Length: 327
Image (cartoon, rainbow, N blue to C red; front, side, top):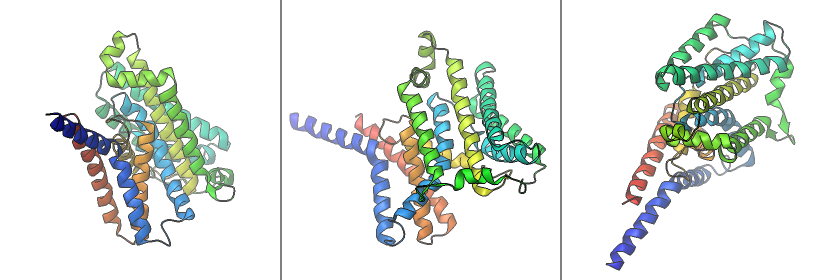
């Protein structure tokens, strides 16, 4: 009898370990495989910096999305906000003649304002978050094209704006990596070391109990949407700087990659919880996968198939392992 209980406990611990660390193990295996298959290109400092640089903008926008998902909602408008932010910041500099710093501040405030709008629609009008943010995404899309008539902002952009992403720290490290680390660190502190973060987690855990405990649930959800909108705007600004132009659909692809990172991250370290470190790991998994496959010369369609399989595999592995761990 004791032997049977011991075996069950051993299996439970094993499944719990796989559930918490399976994605990290998968990431390490992927790194080893790519390093063996392409030893002269993949495991190099320059490629590591390239991976982190490519991951930077995805991590910023996904980090903002994490706050909304933690409170139990969705924001389907973030990619449209990123695209609009790129167009808006360039347009404010070129069409309205505003200085770079003011255009950036106003664009971030616009992202925060749209986040506020999303939060109010969800909390005060009781519209389901998916529907509300799909609707606001459509509004943003319309504003985007109304502002530019669908034409990219290509000329007249100040060199100072392009320089905000071209700088390399110590001559080697792309500054986008620093932006990512700073923003992710700030989000981690907010969510893990502040009263606001504890309330965000409480609302996500049980909104009714949080309300009975005196927490203003609507206010907390609105703040989460403001964080998401602001991070989406920052991503769009940095993307426009990298591209040297404002393009109406430049940030649209971030919707899928952001949700992929957040949900893959939820299968990492914690029992199905959404958290910033997990989101960052999720971003790295997909970015390293794309990078390694590209170095090996794999077709683009296979790279997207890989992304789909890694998302499904990571979440399924985590879910199955935790289910058996509880038995």
